[in-house]
Each structure stands twice: as C-alpha cells, then as structure tokens.
Length: 223
Image (cartoon, rainbow, N blue to C red; front, side):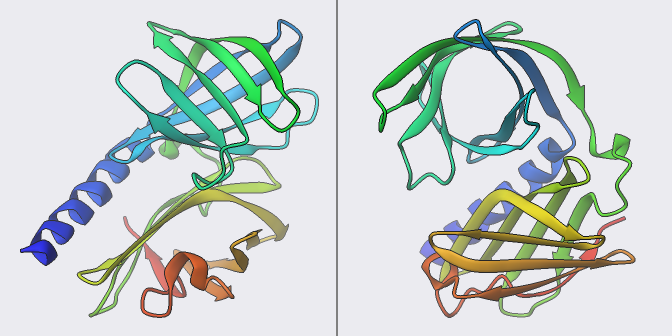
C-alpha cells in the first residue's frame, strides 16, 4: 500500500511541476528600502521554489520554501539549512515581510511587487525544457530553466517504491553546453547538453540520493 501511495504522490509531483514549471512569477523591490532585488518564484506540489538576485550583482541565490497557512518562509540554499531566509505574506501583487540572517543577527524589512510572469516557451535557451530518463527501475525527471549566460535553474526528481529524491537548485555554466552544481552534501553534479538531451554525471552525492537512487543518466527532452 505504501508503494502505491508513493507512486501516486510522485506522479502528482511530476505532473504538477511540469504544469507550473512554465509559470514563474517575477517580483522586484527592495530589502531595507535600500538593496534592489529581483525574485523569481514558482509554486509546486512541494511548496514554493525559485531564486533571487541583487540587481547590482546579478548572481542568482536559490530559494526553497517552508510554507504554512499564515506565512511563507523562503530559505536560501537547501531546506536542511535555515540560517538566511525571507519570511512574509503575499497579498495580491505584493510580497512583503522580513529578510533574516540568523548568523549575523540581522533582520531587514522587504517589499516586492509582482511585475510579470515568465514562461519556458519564451526562453531563448535551447536547453530549457522538461526531460525524462528511461529507466525500468527508477522514474527520473529533469526541468531546466536558463537564467542567463552563467546559470541554470534545475528541478531534478528521482524515485521508485524504495526511494524518493528531489533536488532543486542552481548550476553554474562552465562552458557552452556544460554546467556544474555542488554543495556541502554533494561534491558535483555535472550537466552536459547536446541536441534534445541532457547527460548527468555525479560524484559523492550519496547524502542526497543514496546508492539506489542515482541522478546520473541520459535525459531526453520532451516535445
């Protein structure tokens, strides 16, 4: 029964992410009425995900949500981290609250306004899109959005009745057609793109995917 429930939840997540993946809301505004930022958010079955960047630097910082009925908490980095985050409410076109850095004991107000919606179809990148990996034992899905010439936003899910892995983050483009992600729990996930395919290799990422649920493989773009 648990296996059937897992498969149902995984299918719902994949379908919902594919639907929402093409609909990213863009917010612009200021932190502490001083620092200009742009935030890109999408809602999935797992919560709200996206990234933001300071206008002066244009370097994307990933955001992952911890959502309750009354507030939205967007954590910088992965969900196992909880040191720096946005916390607030969305009312109409306005998202406002406080940006908090617990390490440095800082809290600044922020106010952002919804300024537009991005679609994957509108991307100029040839790598942006939805990909699947054909595997008899595992269900593997990959979604890619090109942020700019330096970064890709990715949503990578792998699952079976025995495991379920979801990694949503930002990869840095190293050379044309290649990008790399790494953090404290994964030494490297490498993306290599060719016509309608994405090849993923990984190194020391067992903290995410264990030994039975690897990210690696060749993913084919859905048309």
